Length: 488
Image 1 (cartoon, rainbow, N blue to C red):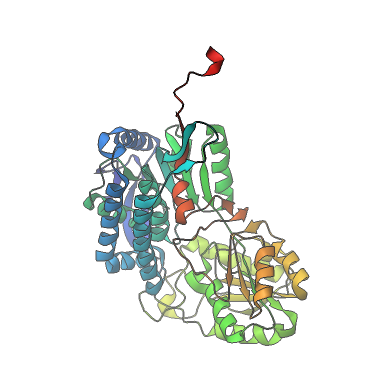
Image 2: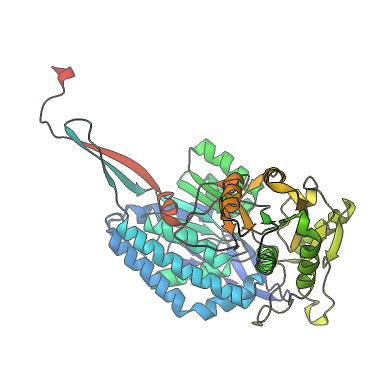
């Protein structure tokens, strides 16, 4: 099997790192061998990006001209949408209906930031004397985008599109488990007319390629989505470089069901919140808080519905639960189910490999519900990143808020109630970057997204996400024509 080349500053070529083999999580069959970048490849990509940034063709390009390139990329993704969705389905095992939605998200992201790029204003600030003052925004330079394996094309679009819209050059390091979609985006960006050097896609491991990118003195910002441990390490390097970072990290999000909730609606929302994407989501509603007065009947129905979820080949449109990303991750998730038992939890359903022989070669795992644990247990505190939901009863709002906030994480939260006053109180009291009320995992590219506490730093999406790739500059013009009096 010949290796796929990486994309280095406009050139498709073999990297100097050891190649990696990507596999289809459905049956662990080899998909492709991919060339990877070492530190010298990273250095060359940065040098080419700096040259491209300095070239008049990009440096002086007007915002509406950059926007046109982004619009072309969106149109090309749309043209190839089904092919890209099928490729991502093979690359990371998500059911096809989910990968189609992720491709649609990427299209919308490029279109949104094209519009934002074209319309973003500076400010004429209020004068406090006989002068004119302005606040402008300029590109940072060469930025690094390090993306995860759970939603490749959407995550990469959320970093590439605003970085280019802001006028930067971008070097993408996709996860070594799912590098194929980033390479496809590079092909489409080239076809759309993006000048050479402004985009590189360098597959490789975090320890080699990622570390070289973060440490390189020519990288002026890192946008990272992934685990909290790695995020902290990036933050330490960034502090030494005095470099801004955006860190979208882990989560252990509460999904809260009050006694007055529409139970049918809440059950659907809880199922979707924890088990969609096989629970491999930073925003998964993995701590399921249920009011004690409805706890038993809610849990009984939720367990029945969980057992009815359709596990199968992600190529089938009816599949709800696909495979986990890798055998190693399957072992990790299974280890947390064992831990739950050791901590005194009851496994109400799932928590083991399915018996269907057609799924035996893949990384399949039956979605699990656990109760009988306290919020202090490791199973209820550590990010599992898999289809394991922990059920926790609560007594009243004060008890609920105390438990919900008793976590190192602060990424997301769901609230199910028909009382809008209560929804407002809880939404304001819970420490989370995003709160959904009577829904879950609803997103808009026009609304900022990010986490608090160990869940991250900074925001992606919306105008906040665009300005995160820019630096502010102030300008002053004297209007008086008089010499500065101090010099007289």
